[in-house]
Image (cartoon, rainbow, N blue to C red; front, side, top):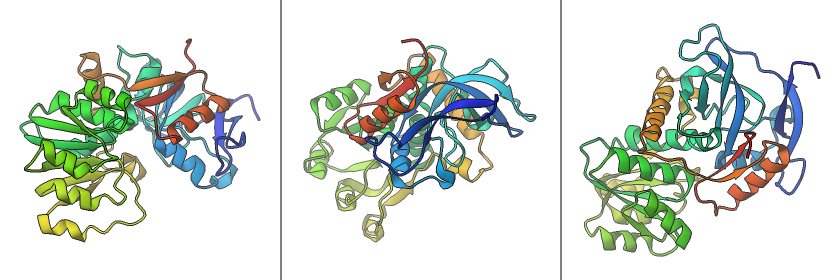
Length: 340
């Protein structure tokens, strides 16, 4: 341990949150910037299903790993090739899955996947947005290619979750001709998705296809799903010919041959793909986050933070992981070191 070490929370094994060794307070070497990197002092983070999956899925190589895939903070230093930001800028981002995460006092992150934090939001409420906003934007506009003139019906499966909550808002704000049907199974989640802009709500615990077809007898054009396991026959039934599905989950097996009869299209959305493979258009995520910021600051989108915990430490992160793992969270769980 040296004077350059910084505070961090690390995963030490594939352990349940009930085990205090699952996430541990420690100190790690301060990050060194690559040419396009920002060094960000992290003020707030959120917990996503990917954190839960990685924490419980496998022990980290090397014995420990810093998780965290959403952050808001302040730029403290920049790499030699940085042009988009300077020290003192307030930023937010989702980071990269193959680099140390945001559960640390300082994080190195490529400027091309960073946005300017909405001025109208606290760090905590800003930290709820990047991963889910990028996922929803890419799913709706890059994969399903729903353009500004589009008309039709979009089903958002898992409407009260982080991605669903952003997808409903983005579709309502930017695609006025699209009718949005969201799934929700509890009165509080039903109220949440309606308040975000869903035109109708169906219960995914019932006969989903029958409920959707009761409101859209001719079928629907698009599905964004957070849970595709075993659902293909249901989706096929409700989609019109040439309809499209975009999925963000991880089914162990998927047989899409049955989609051929209606010439349906299946898409995968993986927000980390651009950074993981250093895509030529990596800067597109910076552009999307800046567009999200403008929508927030002009009142067309709102933060989906619903639970704000203090501070960012191992005990509180274990609590947050347990909440997300329960599958009953509406919106997003965030942690902050800002004053309560």
